[in-house]
Length: 309
Length: 304
Image (cartoon, each protein chain N blue to C red):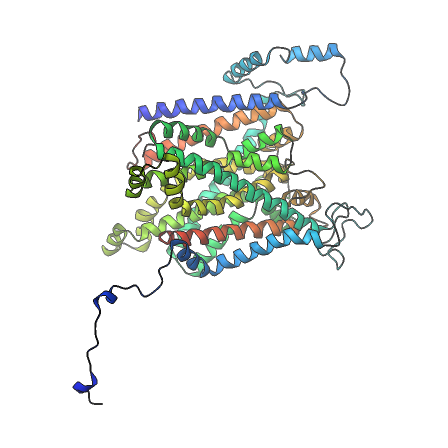
């Protein structure tokens, strides 16, 4: 276990290092600097700006500086938003995104599992077909279309929820459901096919034969095993919720990190793009590692041998 | 009726004929195609996709309108006999733009999936066949690329390079092949210890020949399934990028850019959002359903 863990952590650090390096050099490769604008800046001011931001040093030295600053978690100033640093932007936006993301995750996990279990128990009956119809629609309709559809029905036509902005609980309902649709559909399909496989296993027959009710058999014996693949899907799931938040936050006008990221892309605010990418990557790589560890703790059958066949 | 001995007569029995196979034997692919054809949902999806493909090629050619002409007097007009899907905020015909968008979206989806296919199959095939250290290094590289969310990488690449159809295809193709490589590698690992590989080896076939002539053809089933599901992923990513303003630039339209442009006007001119949205959703739905159908047809054991 310890050997496996340390190996994983080493690989994690290598991949983070590569991501930071790639981001840095990709951003350096962009034509034009952060201060090339419509107005020509006098050369003295340009030089002073370059000096202030460390842009007058050789590229390699800047790269080392950047690595050092990432390690000390100082992601530098924003080029476009003069008063904030990248750390400020992350501290400001991330709690909102986290709130939205956790709500969406909960909806996706509970909704998806319920739909999947229902479909498997009512295999080839109408409940099965309806659940799988919902699931395939969730996989097919892009989230931004779903989000605008929700806005049209529930805000404009029915007036149940506010159309955009962020504040009360009511504001969070539509974006959470829009964000949850895709992972919900995926989890529902995954749960259903696992449940079907497990329901035909001998130990389920044994449980039935000794007179347990359908409820006990399902909850105590079947669902537990059917959920394992769902746990392993939690890593990619959080990645999906995270990238999904870029569009959802834009559509609903939510002041989260996803919207900041999209804004920084259209403003070409390179330090913010870099900082946010690095932040997201660290978040995800750590999450995936945690999920893998949980997975092995839940299922003792899985041997940690470093992924060899 | 009385049955007597005269009603019966012995027929000559030929032992050789007893072993004869009466029905024509079905090849694996013909069998798969037969199963796919009996799947109504998959066939409807296939027909729908063919219609979209033909429409994407021919509608912009033969329509009286084009995708770029603006008409500031006739802007934001609802659907009518002249403009079947209405016009957008610059008076451009939405019907032609939707079909033109189909060209872009389908091109991106299919081309990106093909790049995935080529890189993934070669990478996974080599890693799986050689195994050992080669496998370890190649799959670690794949793991590292996989650790960063796909869309984040594509977004970064799109920020750095000139946005356009080719950039989108390359960005998605270069980052999306990991899944394919993993599947091919897993299958090759299982297959490489089979006798026919040993036979080929003993006949002096080199590694290239064994991988591409003997192993890959036997992995075609899973490859096809992965391919059919990576097309909708690519179409989705393209519309996602276009929606964020990182896709194709005006006046060229894709479904994503059209939906993005139509979104603010949803309340008053809903057709500008509705038509591209319906087209994206139905196409993705058809690809997903067809992919499910192909999976069931290629591997009947998976059918649930």
